[in-house]
Image 1: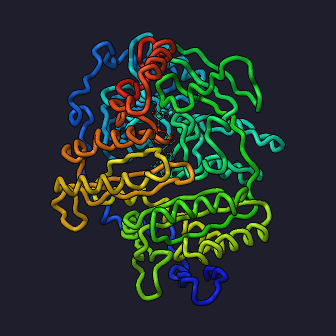
Image 2 (image 1 turned 180 degrees about the vertical axis):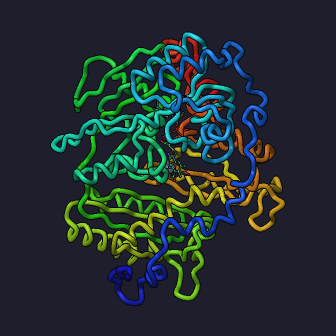
Image 3 (image 1 turned 90 degrees about the vertical axis):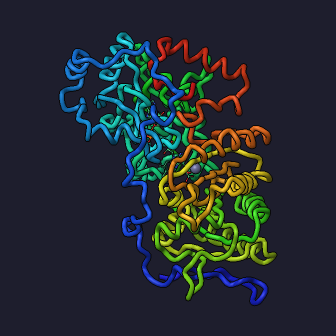
Length: 539
Ligand code: FAD
Ligand code: MLT
Ligand code: ZN
């Protein structure tokens, strides 16, 4: 296996690194070999209620009784009512191991009508509810705070139909994203969303969070591709708009209310979504750059030169690559033959192109890369030659999420900012943590290992991860509201794609005006007057 060398005009162009071309590359299994870095997995997650004592259980909500359990069993059957404390743990704890709720029951209905019966009952009996999908939320949205009833849509997992002519997929909300993607691959189509959690997250959870992911640049937001939804309102009413219409201007576009509603308005049970044709050729380039300005310049040129075949443009700082390298144990794509470490470039970019004509797409990518290397906008790079290499290059981007937690945990900030100012937030946060004596990569007595930056530059979306050894209050207080103030000062958004959840519930005013917040509250009050849906979050 060898990586393709880009054509270069002798001495003026820098060497293209081929370090990862040596042998066949280990894939996902490598992660487990490096589990010694995942210190957090052994620690007990603190209860959210203890960690955030200012958040009080709403006394209006009822406590679960045996009568409730008997009713639930009569609706969904004994096996779909989980009460064993060991089994409940996975539903109470979040992916970051930052939040832990105390739910006593998880319900796993198998149909929309069962969900309708359950919600009607909970609403009448004032039992608070947390809808749960794949539980990959990065803002503490998917787990209870106190003893809310968890309703998991995991058993709603059927593809309902797919129309190969229009590309419209109709499916239950509990279909795992990767399964939807595999199904579509067999039919020459692609799901218009891809993200690192695809093996666990559900398409309903994706809609509920309005997930952005790795190809928003190409396929746009779910607000555009979702054509219809089926959802159950808190009083049990089934809202059915499972349309196949691209155009429908009859009144308010109600489905949009649920896209990004984070479980606060009802439970999404079905999805109708427009899926593009599957690209026949895909290629990935992984580049090293000497400054953030050059990252921006490369993006500008990629948009212009690669145009319709550009499908992803992701950036990573060097620190994120050091984490990924330690976590995976793989030699870096741009490392030298003798030194497999992450090279010194401060920034890296992953560009994906995809289209329908491999020769044309490869030629276009090659000519773009020649041009950006010729004038030294890009310092170094490598291009995938086959599917395995393509996946390996993506892994250097996708593994950052998990690698960020390897010291113990991660405070995550997912922000939209104007591109020129985007990266400076990472520097100012690192500076602040250093000034406060909280940050050191080497000194394990410091709570913070590093502040790293990466993200979807094509969408103006920075991920700032503060990788910690423990979820210390002093770190949180140093970061919040500091980060949100910086974002507000630059007219950015405090949540580009992960949502508000529990983490940002006190900070929505940094991105929304009082009028907007009031309109959100009015809608919530109208559709969920008793406030049973995902309380203590978002609103
Ligand atoms: P959950 O985590 O279970 O729930 C998320 C929220 O939606 C909760 O508030 C929950 O109450 C609500 N909810 C879930 N299902 C329903 C339903 N059927 N009806 C109503 N409400 C519901 N996010 C991105 O945007 N882009 C990324 O690139 C990205 N990458 C990620 C990579 C990793 C490794 C991880 C762990 C997470 C990533 N995420 C990303 C965040 C997360 O995966 C997404 O937010 C995802 O869409 C959540 O789906 P889920 O099924 O896991 O939902
Ligand atoms: C990503 O882009 O990798 C995701 O949003 C997840 C993350 O930031 O951890
Ligand atoms: Zn992201």
